[in-house]
Length: 353
Ligand SMILES: [Mg+2]
Image 1 (cartoon, rainbow, N blue to C red):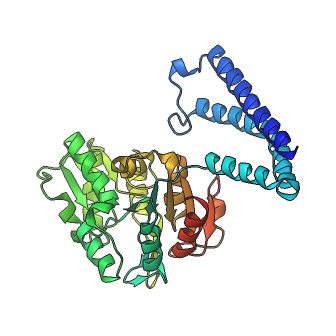
Image 2: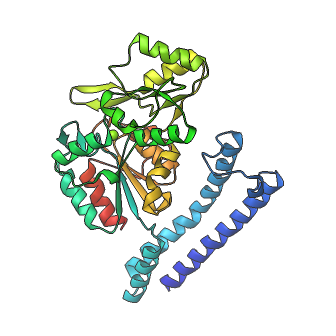
Image 3: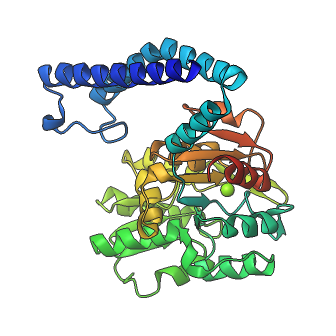
């Protein structure tokens, strides 16, 4: 009996969704914003149209709430009073409805380690994740260290990973320079220059800026300022406001990028997290869509917010740069906020695989 009721409610939800989608598309076509007119989802068109589309979808979601509540009550009744066969059927249904997780993207600094200290238990947790049937990739907004330096540091801390599993914002910047055939003025730390080997830097016609404390002096920033005024594009590896060091929080490249934007009245092209293309590039060789991936990181905006805007799930860990209340700084909030990387892995193994 309870199972029959449960099935009826599921059918009602499906029908409501179908009717809502049908009317939504008809309405959008009427006002000239239908699929044929090329209006994409959230993020593709950040203007008023995208905002109204999201409002329509939010109303549709709210209309579903009463049905979802009744549905949840039915599940509880079924679990309490259903026969063994009915409970088994319910479990099969709920497993079939789960999002199939195929890849886990993991931030490095602040999530697996802080400078030369590993987050307690992170190595074992990574090994456990590797034993599960899920792809793993390490994504970082580093601007100070080359991929090889990062790999050596992590291997010294006993993390099991390979160079080809690391995707950095420097890799994303290099791709853009190659694609546009720019000759950059590179404002990055000397340790990161290795990742730009082979890129022509004579007579620069673009400014690439990362975290480069040794280059952030008046003369160099003024040279960049004059180039941008003369029409050179400003490419920011990322715009993090600050990051975590052993001696406390420290200024990231964001304030310097914003300073150049302010002085030149131009907007930087950002290539690292939280940009949607950064996440899709990172997933590109894993053979899965954003809907089949999850991101774990200590930065609410750049790791979790960025990943969720790209269509992934996001887990915020309370290590590294995390500060009390960071989970409230993004909307929608993180899929999960937990103490550290090992807790995030535990959650994934128990609930998403
Ligand atoms: Mg981090």
